[in-house]
Amino acid sequence: MFKDIFICLVGDCHAAETKRELTRNGPKPLRKKLQVPSESVLFFGCRHRNGDFLYENELSKLLSQTPNRLITAFSRDGQEKVYVQHRIRQEASLVWSALERGGKIYICGDGFHMAADVHNALVDVVVNKSKGQFATRQAADEYVKARTSMDVWST
Image (cartoon, rainbow, N blue to C red; front, side):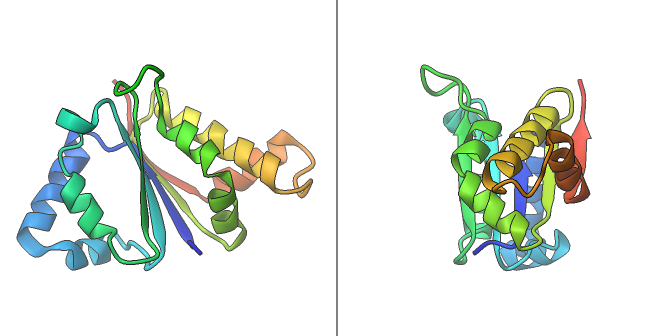
């Protein structure tokens, strides 16, 4: 099962750097540079698969080795908006299993809304999957904060 969880909403600047690195050196050096563990899951979200998911092939290749997974959310492709935090809640068992095993969370992207929404989804997962291990929502919040690193920006 997965040890580390990568939760990202990748914007142009991150995607451009990833593309440049992949183009120059291929996926293995990028995995090492980013310290991507051998087991990871990437939650990736943007508005539209077509037009916004510019580096789908590169990300898929980067995470192509089993047991890695790429879970996507495209907020404007369907009748209902689907965001990364929705996918986290849908994959609650996977997320909880990784956290129980000491997994780390890396959130990249919009710090104005997305980061807080993702954090709240993670706290929901901990509260709902921990079978009473965390007596309060505050305790679950502290548990998530202790495992999270962020690279976020605001507009």
